[in-house]
Image 1: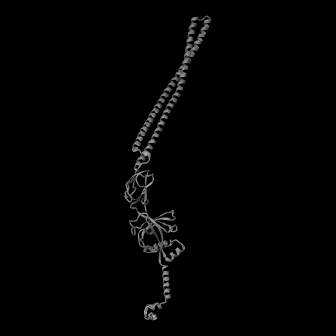
Image 2: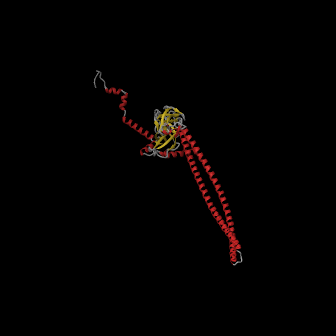
Image 3: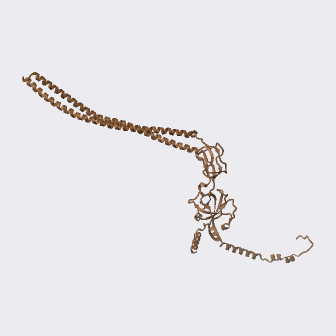
Length: 454
């Protein structure tokens, strides 16, 4: 030690006077350390029997309960060129408000009077179809008239055949009578000639008899010719009956062919009219798609297609919106090993990104800044990330979720399971076992039995 003073001092005397130094000197540090370690061990052992709430922690994000209230893109139904914008990003629009106006880029729709011209074409086709209808009606009347004429002609010919048949019978009788008269005249002439040769009759009588014989012969020939002519007329009349039938059948068939052709043309015109009316309806509907409107009350998030004069294809997104007044929900994902522990109606504590929170794992009731949610739906199939999706809705019996939450905000979800001792939870984690779900069922049964006893 460096002596900087001439005064002498005794270190033993100084140590004897100081009470604190006496304590330090006389204290036994080994005993205090032992007591401290024993106390810590006893405290740690007692803490092993303290209650611990099992939880399933998972990350998620905010979404909406209804699919139609989730963020979406608005697409153009038809292709065109953006002519004018009516909104700004971040603006609130109501359902039906105009977002943008597009013009045509296809030459098939360039005509400004396309609808009027198509209507005129439809009117012309309607007139043509009316003409075909009138033609069909005229042909049907013509066919009916020919059928009536056919009946009259056939009846007239049948009457003529009947008359000829009767005339054939009459001429046949006349021919038979003339033949008989001819035979008698021939016999008388022969006898007269024989008597004349014997000198019993004069030549005058013979010549008279020869004259009568010749008259009888002429009458016989005339009757035979008349009979044959009548038979020929009967045969011709019967042949005319078939000819009349064939002629009228040909005429009626030709009229029917013209009728069916007119009907075919009428149906073709009707089909063309339907097709043109369909085109007219499409043109009218297409005119309504030039103005792109908001499908619901929403906020404009981002204009995907920018500027004026930009060409967009049909089905291409031009603006992104977020629906207003959406009922929020949380979308969380859990591992398959934890999926059997999640039940509909189970409560979950939620931590939203950006809100101050103090989380005490194992004692969620002591945490601060968390919000309550209830499981209301769970997917039946696994997602692409290898986990099951769980949807949570706000717990109406707990504090309301912050009004400034935005869809897509990140969350941390803590599904509260059953209470177990801390040693059980340590043992479970060391062995990699899932949280016990049997004690939950037992506790529920115990609660029911206690309620029944009460």
